[in-house]
Image (cartoon, rainbow over all chains, first blue to last red; front, side):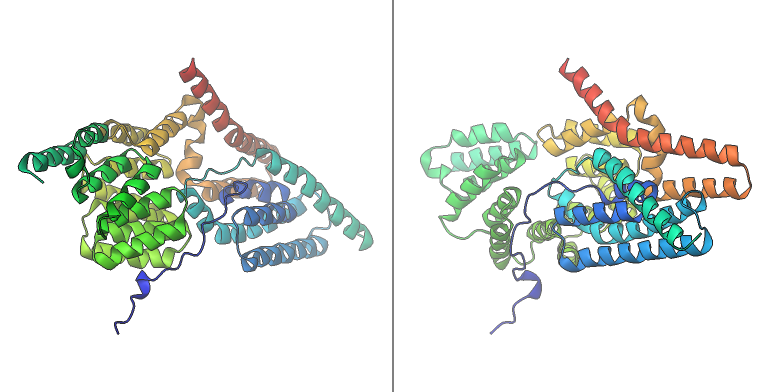
Length: 151
Length: 290
């Protein structure tokens, strides 16, 4: 009996579902820098849902986001005990690190979505809301922690 | 089939080669019932409908033709049509049936590779494209699939290289021109992109995707979007690195007013990059409608 060619065996079980269009992962860099870790993590998780990504990809993003947030708080408390100024740069750097995970996990699925003829959704209003909303949440969280730490 | 009927089908094939699918369909409509049911007529009809992106009719024609017996080309057309209709598992079945009949067909292998790319199976697609390239390295379908693969894996330079090779070998092929234009657009070279895509549309006026891309690049070549060229050319991440690096250096040098001015300029540039393209698109569309 001839051995079946592994390349010519069926591997496609379903057509990817058509839902809400995803955002371009590269575009999430803007909320990452201006809004910080929380903004890019939440937007990234929403985008992962829109791209129908696996649970492991979502957990990787959530884990990176939590780690980056922890690192951002620790660095701010230890080195730059303030909410503005250098602490803002630390927040932006942590946001960029989280965005690198978004880009790493979502670029290929997004390009496959584009090859299927899909158009990206507009990020302007959700991005702005995330920058303002989560930026404020992060600043308040830091202020509370700084007050609690007596700085 | 009689000799005049064979000549009739040769004429249809010649019309397809000339990029006149609508005329080819009209010629096929003039065939009497007997030859119209010939497998070659079904192949030509499916090819003409493919050129016109009439996918539901391509699928119907292929199925009718396959009623006469298995045929690799018609199964390939059926797979292609089902892919465009979003029925990926059925498309895969049709393509695998076609490949069972013609396992070394570069066209079928690339069709299957393209389908795998759409569902994110890039490793399998890579192996299929390699096999297709081994079978026929200079087939236009192989060049197109190599481009798609490079694009899907984020290899923008690789995609541009393939597009250049393709255009070098087939300087007037509509797909070569379109892919060259798309690669140039991806690297922010909007002038080159607009020219190549315009030529692609001129070579194949029925190509809806190239026409849409040509329109998009014309939008991005608009004078109001000139300030965004560096962003498109460098890519988002390197541009941000340059901006953040500049701000850091200015701050380290203690030039606070310059750093503040640079930060404000950068913020304004970011907002402009978000807001300007949709506005220009609306402007251009409004002018065309007017």
